[in-house]
Image (cartoon, rainbow, N blue to C red; front, side, top):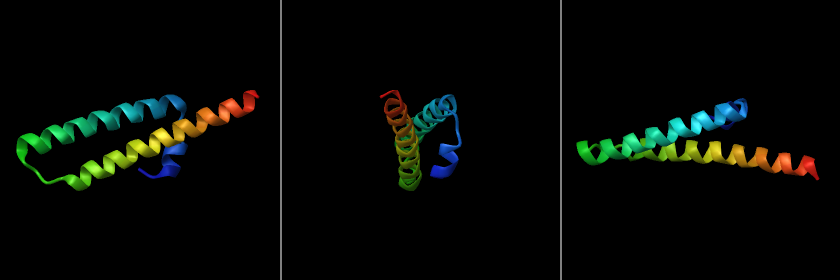
Length: 69
């Protein structure tokens, strides 16, 4: 998922997307342990998507604080 796509989501959409990504990461880790599959690339991509979502959420939080002052 690209940063531009993430920025287009609403705040609620970001929370839902974050929850979905975290669940997906958990499932990938479980599958990696149980099936001995080498999908380190998938895990890395999901972790980066989670970081992007969290970054956009924090940017919006800081922007909201700046407008209050």
